[in-house]
Length: 197
Image 1 (tube, rainbow, N blue to C red):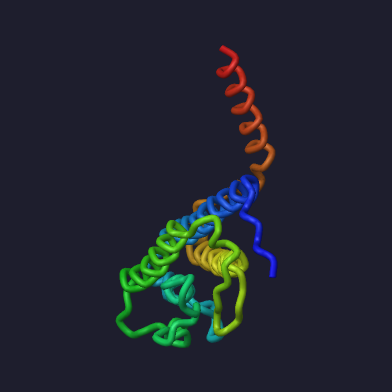
Image 2: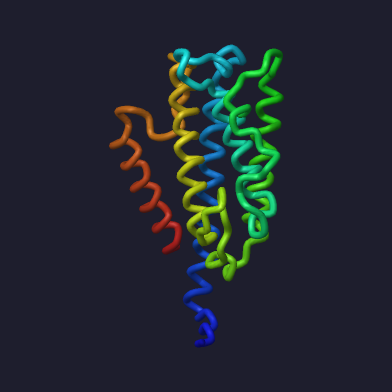
């Protein structure tokens, strides 16, 4: 049996960059969903489009529950924890408030952020399991990021629908792409002029 080669400097640098990118992309999705949800009143937070749709509140409590389950003892236990009530994440409890939903959301994100902060470059190639399915840490992170991004997009869509004309865009406003690009180029030229002084 051959002994694995120690990681090269470039492997380590790549792993460090990848971990930083995961932290940034997860953080961007969190910010996107939170800024969208903040534009909706409490009624809109719990409203559904129809009987088969989820509310913003349900989507956010599901993401919180998922992240708490997946990233508690991430490297050492299966990502589907025995105490998780996934079906319950999709229910609106009578009397539930925005504060209740945000507490579940925040708990999930704190769990993820702690896991990401403690991961080391060598951990990316370790094996973890989700519902008994083995996968590399780097794969589990990619899977989770895709899941979070899907639900963040749902929150944005629902919040935009509920906010209506009050909606404040979270990206480049419709019909403003050229103006945005022009301003970006002008800022880059200004930065170059500043750097040459």
